[in-house]
Image (cartoon, rainbow, N blue to C red):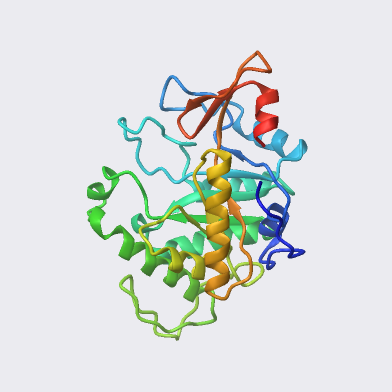
Amino acid sequence: MLEQVYDSEFRPINRGYNSVFTPNRLSIGLVAPLETYAMVPVPTMARHLERVQLAEALGFAAIWLRDVPFNVPSFGDAGQLYDPFVYLGMLAGMTERIALGVASIVLPLRHPAHVAKAAASADALSDGRLILGVASGDRPDEYPALNIPFAERGERFRASYQYIRNLQQDAPAFDNIFGSPYGGMDMLPKPVSGKLPLLITGGSQQDPDWIARNGDGWMMYPRDAALQAQIIREWRARVEAVGRPVQPVMQPLYVDLVENSEARPQPIHLGFRLGVNQLRSYL
């Protein structure tokens, strides 16, 4: 069992982050597309907006989008098809309470000025409901299509992350491999609270101490519950060692519910095929 955290709250950032992450409380969101497409890599996106609104009405904490620039056949998953930032703009106008997350933007494949502008816009349009996951990417085929060396993704991730953070300041001046704003101009809009919540995904080609020092939380991968608890303990110790307050963790879990409510879990990619009572037990 994982020990309780005795902080009453994580350090507040914005409306979405604050509603999703509370110490010692599990919140559950859904990953778009909200449909089963296990036999084909491309979803239909049928009734997609209606399903997101239903998720909000049912009390789910967040809806999560993914950043999948290309449908890579060998990977077998095209995500929710629509560009995440364009889709966030639509969802911001068609929902009221549910947090809007991206898990995760592949920073090395985008210019950080565009990421910062689009993310701050989505945050403003949703009244502070954006949670931005960031990653270094795991699809090697996408990098040559954009003339970006796959081997440089770690350096580009780190530089992009810092660029985005810097642009949250007023008229910043700094040097970066992506460019050097000179301080005589500004990026608008700013995030509603003045800061975007940035959650780092996996290792993102970075030193674990760097992740503990810089992220507003950590996106993990699904594992056996006992092993996951141990990894979270190590994460908490690392965050404490670098002098930061406790940070939240989150994980995805692909679920294929079967008719038999007591069906034991069978592994699938990033999750389980199981009965609903077994899912309750896992959670």
